[in-house]
Length: 147
Image 1 (cartoon, rainbow, N blue to C red):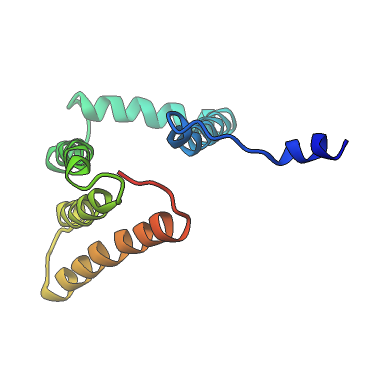
Image 2: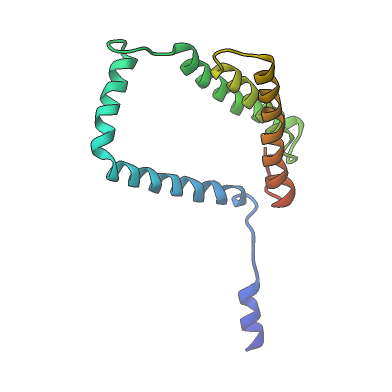
């Protein structure tokens, strides 16, 4: 009888699929939150989406091509280069750390209108501290495998 109860405490981990556990949870949480936002704010979203379509088509308002396409390019490069670097530093999280520092810094530069020396120092510190803190918490404290 006792061994039957102890078997409830046995845990088996499928390492081929274990890295997908948290992304699946986060994805479903985000999908549910998006559905809740769309359901509760539908009347407010429709006019905004129609206006966004007119702006993208160039029929109304200003469209910041540099920031829009720069963000798309930086995000694409971020994920691609993180994958490339993860072959150099497998299962250490260093590719996440290195690419996140570069990504945060370049994205911040893209969205700054007037760069001053003080603002540049703030951007550099933010680009160094925020990813390093995220890397430390995820990879070191929680032992989550990062690319």
